[in-house]
Image (cartoon, rainbow, N blue to C red; front, side):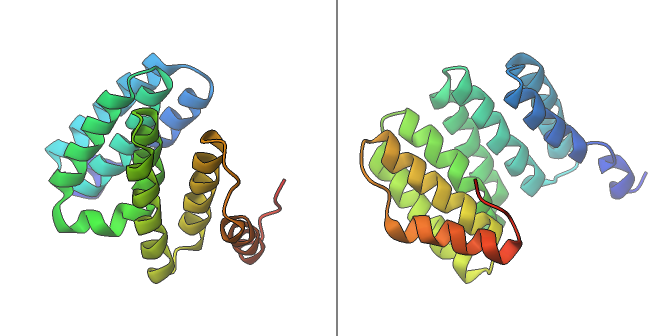
Length: 166
């Protein structure tokens, strides 16, 4: 069986798990993501392991197990090797939320700043917006005013992408 055939149907499980998380079905999402991660590991799809683990870390965070989610994410990031740096803009908001939940706000802010630079350098406008939104959330959660550059940056990227902000 070709690798593409082996992966067919697995990627959508990640998206379905995200929907389950948003619906509060955390145990179902955890089970689905854990199965997908195992399948990706068997196929040596390290970047897919990393993506699925990021979403699993969000699930863990929402169920009060932020430290566990962060540990899983750190392991997946290490396993991905040098390629993981390309994924930093996608993964950073998940990692930063877990760090902040663990009381490590300064590390969370540094993670997001590094990822923001990478997203801009790699010309990833959607990821730039997601990172800026995570930075805004981090500041608001800490009781501080968000950086005006983040606020205007989100609006600018949304406009570029044709997304109507609310």
